[in-house]
Image 1 (tube, one colour):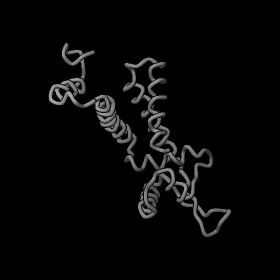
Image 2: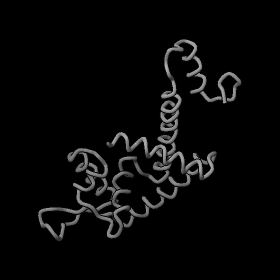
Image 3: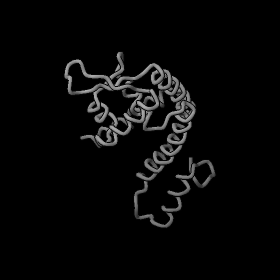
Image 4: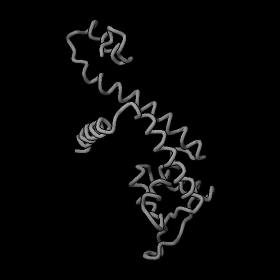
Length: 168
């Protein structure tokens, strides 16, 4: 595809214009990362819509899905939740309080350490997060419908490789 024949996307048009203005630069990073940025914004909107239909905020999804992924009995310590959601201790305390108020989680004494608590997904929380993940998988499959499975697998492998390079 090329921007000049009209078959390209907006990034092709932007890069073509920059190439005309600054032919001394290599714009290949923009060809990749500008598309990632645009797709990220599209994905963010789709996810917010999915969570709204499940009556969840994005931050609520983060906490509830961490608990659900933990497996039965669907509980983690606040510290484990911090590690999985990458927020501050104060923020996590506030989030847990709000989720307790909505009856989506409950606090329980840690049987192994009487001074500690565990956060446990309630039945209502589990129903809500299960509905949300079903909607999320469906919505994201729709977003990727233009790519055959093999292309999706190759793209996932390339994005994993790029992501791991940032963790190194």
